[in-house]
Image (cartoon, rainbow, N blue to C red; front, side, top):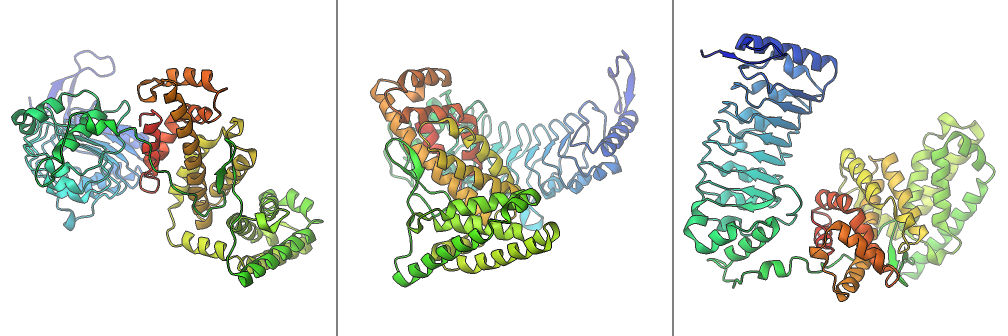
Length: 548
């Protein structure tokens, strides 16, 4: 009874379904997905489905496809789904996975329980550079050499496979979860330098190797494999592996975790529209820094004065601009605030950033404003562009911004996450209102113009400055709490909140700990997204007792 089986469907007990019936049902579901612009399609219940309908490649909106438990073997059509991010084929008889690794944009691929034995040669095919999660558990896989080219991988499941040699995995520096449980791996030294630096939380993370020859044959590894806490097991195992040749480091059980919550070195303030300083237990905007060359500074000072005059000349038009072009009016307001009343307090990068925003908005003036007002705005924008050339700090910053431009999607996603993390700072006593207002403007600019390199860099640099200063405040608060006998690493979120509520009157910096605790999920998300640019954030969160 190869293509027939008794199965329940739609409440009809004992209805006999065939591969042909499942194919017809798949065609119906695919057709409906096309009509509805579906982002998810599940064919899991079609356990006799052997072939995918040709029309599946027409679901241009599809992001998630479930084919687990089907009899699909030919997956060639899947690689033509342009937006597919998640694909699950677990428990299917697929053996040739090459088309799947040629699927652009794929982030999660589950091939557990399939018949895959080898990974395709990526030097002969287009590798999925964005693949983050790959499961090959319970497969006859034995050769993982080609996995070394999947540099974005964060989670890799090789449990219960035939894999013996993992030497190629040393290149996967982004790995946060590696499951080798029940595999045939006998030597773990190749992964001793993989950092696993974001291990923790509720998901299965870190290094798992119970039941491997490596764990069975080595008493130390056998003991380490039984540690329940992911972070502790991973840290202690990596420390032990580094005592083996060729690494001559000594190892003592518990030593690796002893420094796991050590305070990180936070970065110094970098050039940005928002630069801050801690003074009297409060984060405020920092003083300006100007060119050391007196002639250059004189030109900048003259430019600042001219900008004040030009902005004053627009005073009569400002109400009309506000009615017709509210974004331009807001940009002019922020430019005026950046100019301030005193040249010595001007942040040239903030001035340039908001000036750049005004210039960008002014390009639409001719289409919206009355002719005379539009001419005045265009003249102001032209003068503004010339006068900003007098500020060397701004020119250097802008040149750096255009040298490495993130994608629009990256900037939009980061702006949203920064807003979620910092959106409630206006209620906190350890941050001055001018900082929260300045960050609101920078976030708004990034959301308004995610394709603008100045907006993108301003968001990244300003957020890093503010969060690192908040971190410095929080570390001070954490030290105060430890002096009171409170161990943040062993306290739950609720216990931490209760302790902070009792401590606020004693130290303002403790409220910074409270803010990080309240926004733990948001900051953990930022630590993951910005792991390369902000490598200090994850250690900071761990030092504050926040699991990521």
